[in-house]
Length: 141
Image (cartoon, rainbow, N blue to C red; front, side):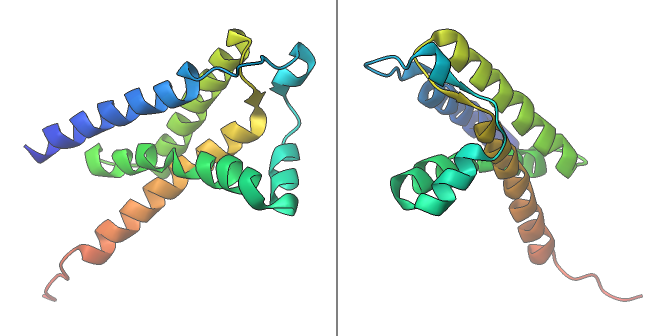
């Protein structure tokens, strides 16, 4: 019963994630020269130094939005591994960024892939740590 609920929540999460990242279109599409950003850490460095909305939307948002994916690996996996969650975050994020670049109306940024992958890994680590902390202590013997 719980597993079915978790799978349903994962499907709803993935639907919302894809809707959020692929359905929205900019009213004025960016010029082709600005649509794809391939320099690692360029946006991250910029938004860290400036702070404000860019920091919250780009950095925090990209990390947080992928934490449920990493958490799902712990909650649904029989033998969860951090690298599986990180690889899934990387693959899903790269696929989303590729689709966004093909749409012609969105920005694609390698930093989004980095932050999304980090988010999936952090989601895994947080739930795995909570699972270990909440596990009943074994009796010696």
